[in-house]
Length: 147
Image 1: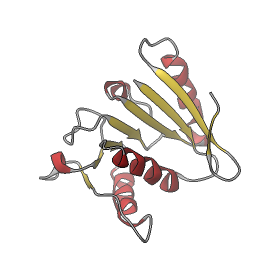
Image 2: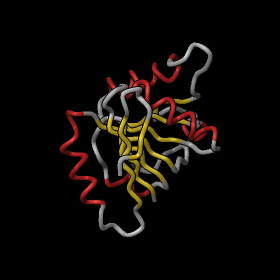
Image 3: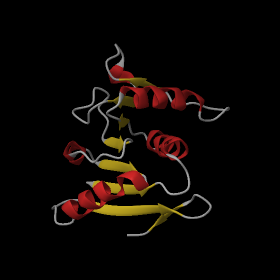
């Protein structure tokens, strides 16, 4: 399983997350986006409809009648996703052990959550079957693999 740590230094989550979601969908995968706070989930829901004038990402918030049909599902927890996603995006900066049950986890964090991200990074160092990657944004906002 692969865990990608995305350190948000130049672009906010609202610019980075849709790009990752697009790539997951383009590859034929499904994505679970996790955020504990209802207000953040509502903002993410709106974001995925409006982030680009020429497109949108088909998605829904967990708890709807068609959760199993959603390519992207937004939820409060990283438990078994109703849409069968094998990719999880931790959008609120908090690491969750349940992410290890997916094929790939995208852990987004900013300066406010860097201490927690370092703890998670270290805790995963010796976990069998876990490949860690650390991505940092350069001055242009492009991702560069730093570890």
